[in-house]
Image (cartoon, rainbow, N blue to C red; front, side):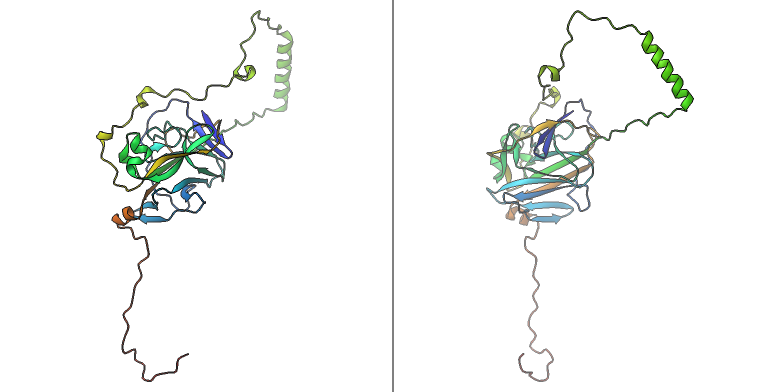
Length: 300
């Protein structure tokens, strides 16, 4: 497996063949989780959040640029596969955390994702738009507009075999046998043909991307699903610099993330239509004409 790295930010290229399993249950981000996701504006201020019926909603506004912020609160590296409006933020394909690449976070690290990745050096910024102008709708999946997801995969822990401890006489006997065997061995014959150089020796880089299965090469038809009920989508915005490179990363489980976080977003009218109160309700008490004072005291 390969992964991609940028400053502290990394995304992965999944090259192993994967089997599909039951998707992990999605949850709104919760306190105490080992990983977290937050949405900030272009100046680094968190967007307002509202919870309803166990789901977390973000208040957005048309034309506003936003950034997805991922945090790893654990002592292990973790890969985060992220989708916006049902589209993978690295490949642009329909979101699929078992096959798609992800950003790799070091222990206790934070990564900011500015947009859909265009190359190793650039992204197309995330910017709130009308649903019809969203990247997902233009790519044929309007039914998924209005949601952001992140699936987190911890790194596989390498377990080194314990050293074999032998009694001293047995260790000496094996050392003598190994020495005799080396002395009796004949030198290997030299081949007349030069050995084929490795990719590292020849200066040629290994291929970055392995071809995906042809079974995955499909797109949802716009007429096959109902459109989203959201008032906002995310467009494929202007180009911004964002450099990444590949790094090696092996998932502890190839198709079962340890944690899946989901954020939904809409504008003020869309959240209000769901019954979400954007401002706290203020309670008023009607004045009492007889508050039981017998005499009129002087004012303070």
